Amino acid sequence: MARWNRQQFMDLMQFRPIPRPFFAELFGPLKQLADEWSADGVPLDQIEMRAFGFDTVDRHFVPVHLGLLGGEEVVLEDTATHRITRDGYGRTMKLAKAAATIPLPLDHPVATMDDWLAIKPRYQWSDERLGTGWDGPYKPDYLVRLGFPGGFDEPRQLMGEENLCLAVAMQPELVHDMLDTMATTAETGLRRLAAAGVRLDYLFVHEDMAGKSGPLFGPRQINEFVGPYYQRVWAAAQECGAQIFGQDSDGDIRPVMDQMLAAGLNMMFPFEPAAGMDMVATRAQYGERLAIMGGIDKHALRHGRAAIDIELARKLVPELNRGTVFGLDHRIPNGVTIDNYRYYVRQARERLGLEADPEPCWGRMAF
Image (cartoon, rainbow, N blue to C red; front, top):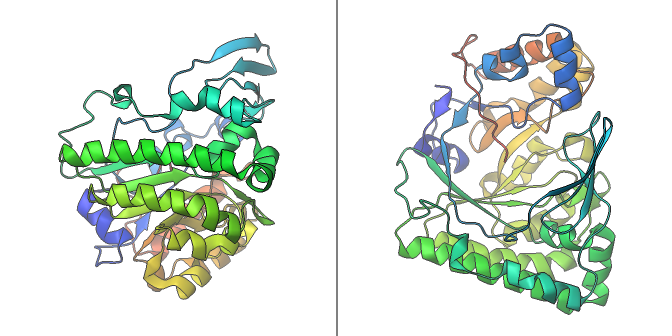
């Protein structure tokens, strides 16, 4: 049963009885690692993760766009080592080809209220946000998912991290207006779905608002800015029947975990152990209030079989089976040999009581 259906996955995430644990790969290998494995002659079906029979669930991604409308990427410079573009936000972006797949911004479009007002119409509602087939029908066995802009992440895309962190103290009306505009657009879209009878299962938000030293917004900023924004969007999503509200954020989210759960979150990933995120301790503290995806230390795979055994013995335990998608806490890092990765998969499947040689199947579990 590598391919789970909607009801099985909903049961898993809501701590109801399940046929067996769910074992997945959230992201797959980093680009450099995939290149290394390819140079070492690793079969393509292993580099692409298909050979390992990971669990997945069929998903519909609702074609209702709730973020920035319009804007096309323009290539400004393209060399053997880097690529510079102007993206849809109007930012100058640089991609280091040898080391990355995600470009980094060199500038940002918003510093003042006037800057925001110039771009604000692209965040307001219009029917062009409704993509083809937005009102269904959707296959009943598929998980129906919709994402919306992050309460930290989207203003960060517009302003940059440093300027956003200054703005919540020095220009709070600017940040409030951004999030109020985005919330109104999300509410409008979700209520169009509800009126059309669309069943939504899973509301998703991307934040990446933390590092190893903690989140860039603390409890006060979550309570004032992000929390009310989440609550508005989640309330509208629940009108469509949504039951899972998931957040993607790297780093240490523990200082604002209570505030995030109070705002409606009930699932988080990737649970980065190197930043102090401990899936065992979190489950002991929050119980069935929070489902988890990820949580297995990716760096253990770099240190060999003994480190892998220790990590799996602690994390792959029966009390975590419900409410957990077991998987590495992010992309498979550089330096992981294919032998160590194969060993990790074999040992994890054995500890979880899964068949040793499943049918090929893979679909990344993090989007």
